[in-house]
Image (cartoon, rainbow, N blue to C red; front, top):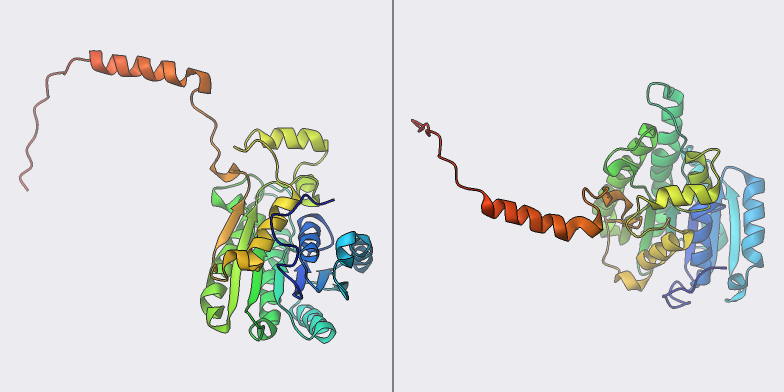
Length: 309
């Protein structure tokens, strides 16, 4: 069950949304949130048809899918790396719904690999899924989003890997950097079409396939404890945290005036540095340093060489 939402349950009423990667992990949580806030139809896209069928069946069985008459969960096989596959999927959605209001680009690929051992094919695959996939879907949806009453909305799911540097993920870091740049560029160009383009950069999210891939062989609780040590808020994120950020950027709570921004939702992890001094010693050490500085005597100044300039 989802946690209680701070948003009105009808804040996305009658909206039609597409979610790539909507069958699992963060994408699934986003799909749940879109439905529970009134979207009339959410279409989940992915490469594995049987996986989408299972996810759609589960989504339809939940109470929120019965909150509004004619509310639907649809699915369509789509390889976001292939531009024509994206066009076909988007055309299917329009044929079914006669409009598209929201696009969530959540499809992603990642795995751990040292750069020296990472094959060019492996690097290219992640770039194609994450970066090309995001562009392909945005490009295919543009003609429909620009004709949306009230303005279309695109949200690109990014990451925080690239804000500094992350071990063994040069491929994913490069792809996410490109997505952040694409978000800004499309927001600039498509604003005149009434399309808002924003991003969300999640931190580590518990109980998702992505996190499991990046910590192979470790128990879920062990992973959470280990990662939480480097998060100022002291816990890993939940799918709910990301889904609420999506609802905020899609609905009127954002005022319809936020575009070109990437919202970091990571509990402060990307800011984290281990403290140089234990918290309980800060005051005492500060007093000692202050006393020493006051006791210091001014030393004789060395000869100062005057500049001829």
